[in-house]
Length: 177
Image (cartoon, rainbow, N blue to C red; front, side, top):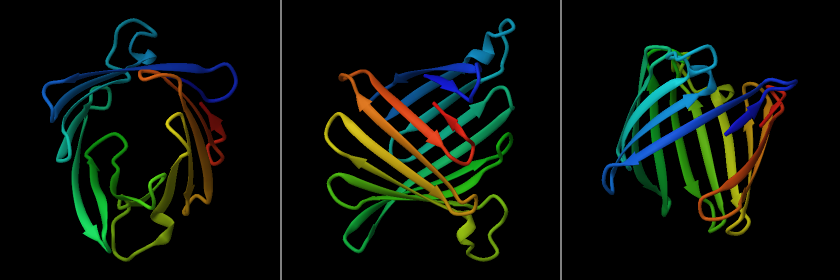
């Protein structure tokens, strides 16, 4: 994946995933920062995942472990996917996410940021994202963060079974990739 934050600054990221069996996988991620000035720990992370249950990840550069717990619940005849993420160092995020299918082409995601503590519900900690799968090849993914009052949008095109192109614009960060 190539990313651009404006100007001539372009970075690259590689993800290698080993599927150990039908449920377990191991992922290694490295960015170009890990080799930019000689080999280093910068931009390197590793993760172990059991599909549908949990993910334990470790950010080597930031010495930061993180945990994601995955579950499902049935609400009003819809299956809602739930994800709780807790990062101990680095980004130090603490989030609760829910996602469900609105119809056969549209999926809605809600993300609530618990990082600042949870003493009362606060809509400024909420972001809403939808994914509309137009056909097998095209998808559009708008997102709005209520706290930052920021809109972003991604468009994805599948070239073939193994390759896709994704364009992303973030109004709040003023970046595209």
